[in-house]
Image (cartoon, rainbow, N blue to C red; front, side, top):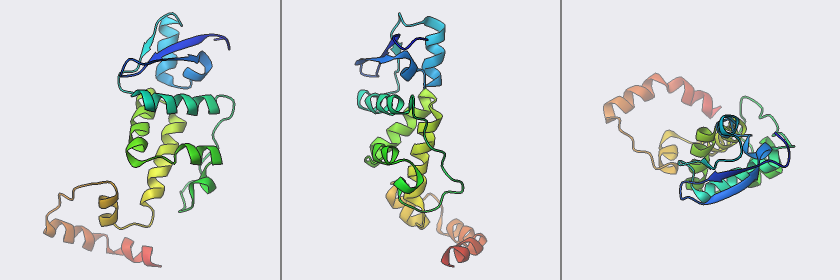
Length: 165
């Protein structure tokens, strides 16, 4: 793969994007397709919308020569720019629906560092919140009966006590 080789990526809407092979190949899916067919064929990405593919390309372009910093584990509740680089914190500062589309795209395209970044953002959004607050934040339905919910709370009482300290 040379720096001048270009790949054509096609989003789910058919919009095409020309990117350097080194940028596109940050995705293991695209890299495998490139190795199988070369640069002559358009690489279809049926699960990635155009506006999300633009963001993915931006991420890969930035990190091609600038690997993302490792995230400390376990994750501590802090501002995103304390956990990741300022560029990554700005990149991931998106509406919740866009964040989830980025997660799906990073998973589909097999871009581990971008998937990790998105998951750190989601984890940060959940830190310090009760299960009910998390359900409201992510529009999740509680399908436990009141009896099941009470039993779970009783089983996990120790973890709620630790969180209060």
